[in-house]
Every structure is written in C-alpha cells, then in structure tokens.
Image 1: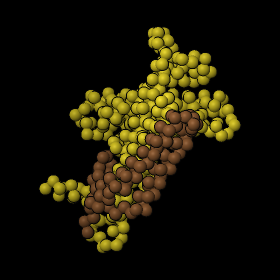
Image 2: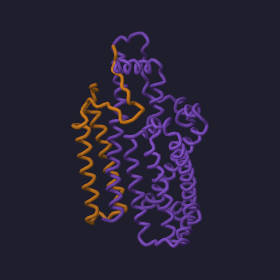
Image 3: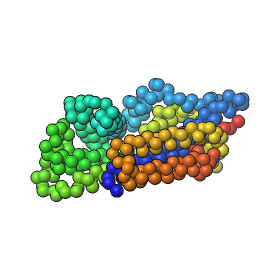
Image 4: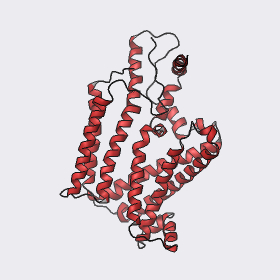
Length: 267
Length: 81
C-alpha cells in the first residue's frame, strides 16, 4: 500500500469517527435542547424558567470565540497563550484548506499557475509557516504552564491534548524540512522560512535523508488525522460548540436548573 | 433520558456522513489510480465506514444516549414540569 492509499483510507476512517462524535456529542445535545424548547412551548412553565436558546448569539460569539473575554478575566498570560493557540490554529487551518484546494485539487480542473508555481504558492507557504509558528509557541507556553500549575489546572487543561497538537504542529515543520532537505532546488524553499532552516541544520549534522521524509510524512498525516478524529470526544469540542454552549448556559435560569439537578443527585 | 430523535433526522445525518465518504473516495481518485488494487482499499474502507456509521446512528446509539464525553454540554437537564 502506497502512502496516498494509506492516507485516504485513514482520512475516511477519521472523518467517520469525527462525524459520529459530532453526532453524539454536539448534534444530539442541541437536539435535546430544542426538544425541551418544544415541550416548553406546549406546557405551562413554572415561574423562573425560560426557554433555552439554541442559536449562538452574535455578541456571545464575538466575546467568547473571537476575543475570549472569559479567559482574560483569569489572567492575561492565560489569555495570550489561548489566543495564540486559537488564532494560530484557525489561520493555519484556513491556509491549509486553501493550500489543499488551490495547490493540490483545483488545478486538475482549471488551468492556472498562480497557486501551483506562482506567487500564490509563496503566499500560502509564508502563511502556513507563520501561523504554525504562532500555534507552536502558544502550545509550548501552554504545556509549560500546565506542568508548573498542574494542581490548579488539571481539571481545566488536558495535557495530552496539548501534547498531541504540539506533536502535530512540530511534525508539520519537520515534514516540510525533510522534503526541502531532499529537494534543495525547490524555488519556493525560502518562503518556508522555518522549515528551510531546519533543513539546513539537518544537512549540517549529516542526518541520513533516505526514506525519512516519507516516514515523517506518514507519521504527520497519522497524528493529524487522529487529532481531527479525537476533536468531538475531547475538550477540543469547544472549538465547535463553545459559543453555542455559552449562549445556552449564560441564561441564568437554565444554569439554575442545572445546579438544582446536580445538587439533587448529590443528595 | 429518552430523546425522541426521528428517523428522518437520523437519515438526514446519515446522508451527510455517506456523502462525505463519497467525496473522500472521489478526492482519492486524484492520487490513487482507480484501476489499481490500491483503490479497492479506499473503496472497501469507505464502505465499511458507511456501514459502521449507519449501525452506530440507527442501532448502537439508540435514542437515549445524550451522554457527556465533553465538558460543554455534559450536564443535561430533564424538563422539570
């Protein structure tokens, strides 16, 4: 089995696991809330209970997803770290999608060279490197902070998730570096401004390049796809539903109902 | 807690899953020769995944699994009226 066959088989499995997780942990829960709303409309509500909103509110999305104001109230360091991870991940994801669509797919159907061997490719390379660096710095700060404050942060921050995404990001740089080390004549090498320096270092220390690039590519693809599949089963699900979740739980009566139920269970 | 998820809703979500898999197989044709035995691996994987997804949605999960594998919606509230 060649590496592309392996990748597409893996991608199909991961996409299925991702969608099943999204179904169970996001879709069904939103469905549940909508179902409560329907009951709410039919039956008379006791005083103090209100209909729960399922739609994300614009202000909540801006404050929670874009500016992450709640984290800022804890500490500016935690906010900086989270904002670096958030913005690095989102921008990297956007550039990765653009690179996949315009650099790998669309030229099979349309005749253009801008993103294949023109300035567009250089732009995408710089964007991938810069956002990847931002993400890697944010993750490194996050791991260090989590290790130093493990007693306080254990319940909030999942260390293995941080390490998984850190490995994904680092192996992305290494994959590009090994590719450049094997193809030093690549005219776009300079635009991969981090990977090209790693490639030079690999050359300087005499790392044998035969086959390592392909193995690194397979390893990076495997951990990346594994990361995608793991999103809806982990705390990372907040990427998808934190704004919706906050829109729901910021309603004080709904929060009160939750607390009441939890208390009754404890008693 | 039983949540009455309709068959239509389940079918709609299943359709999304199957369409994603069809697209992935189509995307794979750009990299894997469709006349090669390697392509059979991709197709077989997609078929197995589709069957597994349908089994998960319609049989394994049932109607009453609004459980919590995440922290965002993990506390579900029963209607108290």
